[in-house]
Image 1: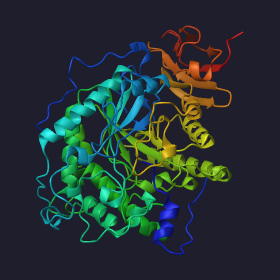
Image 2 (image 1 turned 90 degrees about the horizontal axis):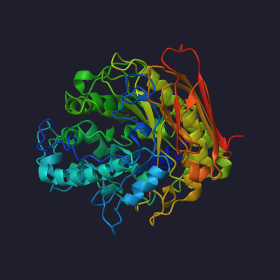
Image 3 (image 1 turned 135 degrees about the vertical axis):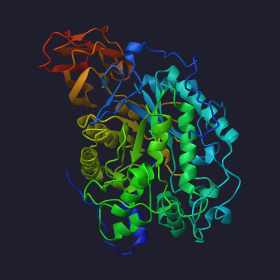
Image 4 (image 1 turned 90 degrees about the vertical axis):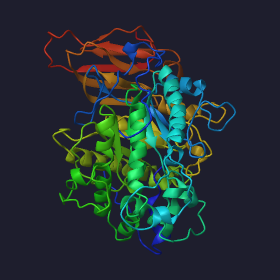
Length: 566
């Protein structure tokens, strides 16, 4: 979940430090793929209204559907962090995710859910923390904790949730979630057998979960994972379970991709903060080694410094392992946890296709409540804009022959708040950057590393209406050309879109309009340079480009305002 507050954590670790944030503008798997089933659900909505997967990230900031349209996704996060570590149809249970949930999500115009899975759900194993058969330092071998039948049952249940979402035209981004590594540290994610603390004991946990990152035992557990320095082969097992997931969903068109590791953390980040640095070259190097593997590492983005991986890291990293099995899925990679704060991250270019730079963006003054005081919203504006600006710099710097212009990008977490001004601010920044997003979070599921203010829907299913109005925006879901500008004013519900049309795309531009929520008396839609082909006040506004013989030298302008046209 939401990035930890760097300032508060730093203060807890470095007593008296005057810290300030710079402010400025498994191919070997025994599981069978379920993706080829002929029983995949037919969407409720017409296929012409849907983003048509699989999506592609050929280079540059945008995602594209199979018709060549630029895609801007809006959606929510849905993650259950307690046993059974998944959201499934289970009436009466706290982890129930029902057809009513999916229907409500679709009604708000959301076409993607970042759907959580956890390593400890896939590979719980039988051993506890600091077991010497796993945690003895040395050359990685095998943990012997994987059980194929356990993993298959887990993924079968997740697959049913993916199918339920698909019935309502909603894609799933599968997110391997973790916060503070494991339950013994007040978090979740890694199984108990994968906790190796070098003999360090866990001291009293803070009720503010994010401060538990400062525990030396937490730092040791993460370090043993990133350096793959124990005989239990922690990275190797993590990679294997991801290969199992990739095999299971490789042919499922409703799984658009995979989020590889939520909010990566390493103890060197705290040292770096205490020294006043806003980026961390050693950890950026470790992350590239983890994602790419020793065979495919290159250099950091900002310094061009060559990367040298720990000796026990896998030769083939997580990204090429997944792409060998599931080559058409998008792979969302994250920088370190403090880049949501905002700090810089420069993992560097990686020679693979379909990569998406995955961003989290939270206001540092919000604290654990998620609600920034009104007096600090100006600080939120600076910090949250800076986070996106830094991500844009890294994205553009990471160009490769596989992705000219760098990877695509996506905002997979923001919000976790009851502050409508902060939501308005963040969605405005996203619109300015033509950036898709998923709000944190759909519901509050007694989250051990969250807060009750994060939810869009209450446990009984009732929407937080002010949040719903702020997040259910008019926006372009699929654009038959290259967008240049998109805006939405939540105070007036006025929407504007400008794009350079591609006359060879015959499918329409699709704009979602939350007609019942934000336009109760109807709306007026106008298009200049193209033709509106949908009925008045349709939930999906369809705009058809001019015929292919028309020279592609003009811009299409689309506007939506309240009340019918006169």
